Length: 325
Image (tube, rainbow, N blue to C red):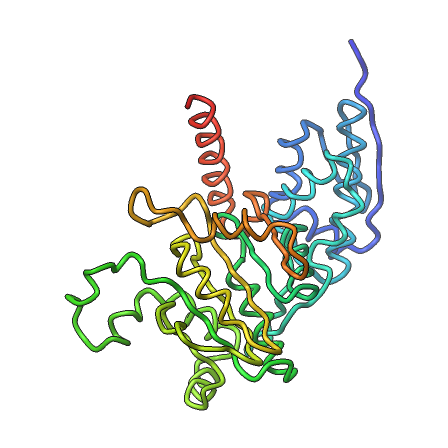
C-alpha cells in the first residue's frame, strides 16, 4: 500500500491559526474536500497528508490564506475556493492580491476592496480609461464598484457630479399605467442605484448632494439632448439599451467626464428581434483607445457562494445549448 505524502507547517500566531481553521474547522474542512487531503493541527503545527501534488497545493493555499489573515482580512468559503482555483492554475502568487487595496470607505467606515482579480482588473481599467464597459453576471460587483469609484472621484473633486442612469425597458408602455408622477413611476427601476449610493455615502449625504445637483439618478431617456461635463456617469443594465439609445448615451460625454457602462449580456429584456446596444457597442468599440472592456465571470461573483454555483450552471447550460444549435 502506497504511503501518503506528508508535509507540515507552523502558524506562530494562535489567533491566526483559529481564523484559518474557522468555526468548527469549516475552512479547513472545505480545503480537505476540494483537494482530498487530510489536515490536522497539533498545537501550532499543521500536518497535511495525501497525494504529493495535492498536499503541496494545499500547503501553498494555507500559507497564502494565513498571509491574508495576517493583513487583518477575514476569509470565507468564497475566498477559499477562489484561492484554491488560483493555486491550481499556477497563480498562487496572485492570491495575495485578493483584498489587497482599499478602493473606498463607506460612511459607516467599512473598507471597500476588490475581492477577485477580475474586480481588480475592472477597477484598474476605470483608473486608466475614460470609458469602461464591464460585462458579467449578477453579483460580480459591476455597479457597486463603479459607484464606489464615482463617490471617491466626487470627494476628491475630480468631478463635479455623479450621474447614474438605467433604461426602464421593463416598463415599456406600461409606465403610463403606474400610479404617481413620472419620478415615482421610474423609481422602482432605479432603486438598486439609490441603495448602492446610500450604502456608500449615507442617505443624509445623498439627499444633500441630490438637492445640490451633485448627484443625479435618472432613467436613460433623461440623457437625450444633454452634454455631460465634469461628471462621473454610470449606465447600469446596459444590455437593455437599443442601438440608438447606446449611441445617444455614449455621445453625451463632455470634457472632464468618465463613463462606466455595466451589463449582463445573458439577461437581455428587449423585445425579440431587437439587438442589444451593449452587444453592438462591444463589437464596434473593441480596440478603440481610451475605452476599456472588462469581462467578469462566475469566478468574480461575491454574493452567497450558491449564486456563484447558479451562474456557473447557467453558463454551462448556455454553452451546451449553443453547441446544439
